[in-house]
Amino acid sequence: MSNDTTEGLVDLYDWYWRRFPARVEGMDDDEYFWEPVPNCWTVRPAPPGGFVADFERPEPTPTPITTIAWRMTHLDAQPSGQSSGMAASGLTPEEYVASYFAPDGAGG
Image (cartoon, rainbow, N blue to C red; front, side):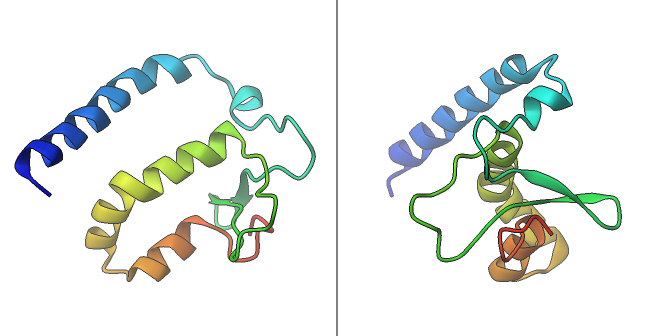
């Protein structure tokens, strides 16, 4: 990838990330975890006091609708979490993703 392409992608990511806080500011838990249809993928409480995002491999067909909470976890686990979290924890990519997502879609 050329430097121009890389810089363009970084700028685009930064632009989206700067807009994000205003979009979720003031959002309460009811909105964040709202499930618009039954059987949504979401983020659920998990011991010891943490949370785990629903996940299943292979993905079911059709892929479930996701909550805002699930999407936010997904965003963190991919562009920032995977690169920074894996480096900080020493986990493999598979271990790192497993630490964010339930292996069976059951929410932990």
